[in-house]
Image 1 (cartoon, rainbow, N blue to C red):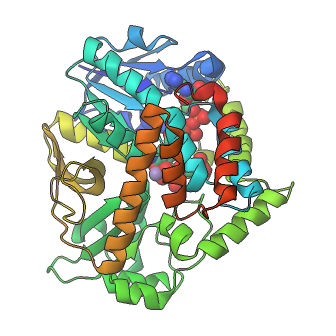
Image 2: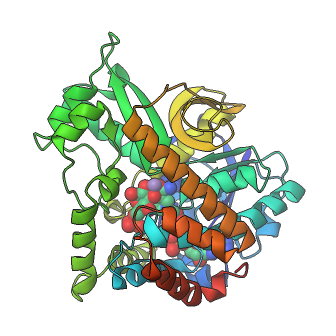
Length: 435
Ligand code: NAD
Ligand code: G6P
Ligand code: MN
């Protein structure tokens, strides 16, 4: 039987993960699941852990859900370690959003100054997880979901020197769930090819005869058909002429870059309205509602309300990846993995988010080919920005943090960039021992 360890077990997404495992039990026979959290998340873990056990008890399978605050107790003998933690919990996210907005800059969980600080807080913790894995479960796979998922996964490979890692995101899953029906097709009739970075990828689509149908999906998008953009992203439309020239489908997050002014204006409007607040403030409400539901001793299945979270359906990526590794299925899944030439515009040893075949040896990235100048330019800028963020996260070097800030397209350079950096460093001091 398979042993799974989930770091950040108190997450409200845990029932989604359980549902995914229950659905795939025939392919992935799980013996035990260990949820790991910290003192600050103990209460959440106890509530959602009991709920997780009820879900297994209501299934035909005999699986025990263990809970611990000591990851070293959980890790020995693990086959898969999944990470879904949030250093500093939602209060830290709200600071990542509100402080940049207070300077007139985007405040967002994975983009701009907030995304950079989430990386600063998270990378030292994940590197600690990797050190424990080297000692306690050296053959395990690390399946990372913790944001910013691309940078966190790259740091594991580059600074943790751990190659058995796969980074995941629900954005490609949602696109593949919704887009086919916009052109009257089903997913199994289509071939998808994704390439780029986490929350910064593009994709192309082909039909069963090999004919490219990307433009048909672009056209359908402008007829108002649901193309699966996560609920947390405000839907300012892309410029149609731009997509026609691009000949690819951007991901939902690209609108922070292609419609920067409008997205910033919308974010500032919500931030300034005490009745609305930032996304993190909104999520706090949803999380409280979810945990009230999870407390119900009769609830033994994932509630509908979880769809209010932007990460809905993430278990399809996580559980599918784990099952495909375990059964050597070589299925197509979009993952963050080592480039190895799949995106020739970027170094071979960096992390990219790409279409890959997932089997017993991990991810085999599918070649995408060279990008056009505009996308190539963005990609190289964003990847090098990520390199600066990771270097600063590991060393605590202030100058490198400034390099990352000034390279980031959401942060105008100048005195204000330094001020927002300083204020964020102070606000998150407790979680930034490296600085
Ligand atoms: P959350 O605030 O519920 O945090 C999950 C748990 O992590 C909490 O119970 C918290 O106590 C725990 N935690 C914090 N520090 C820890 C540590 N050092 N060790 C172990 N546990 C720790 O977060 P959430 O909203 O459920 O999201 C969890 C993570 O998943 C976040 O990083 C979020 O950004 C990410 N996420 C990723 C995607 C994706 O597409 N990759 C989608 C949704 C969420
Ligand atoms: C999805 C993303 C995640 C993201 C999350 C936010 O869009 O793939 O990586 O951070 O949802 O959701 P939330 O409900 O927490 O705002
Ligand atoms: Mn994501």
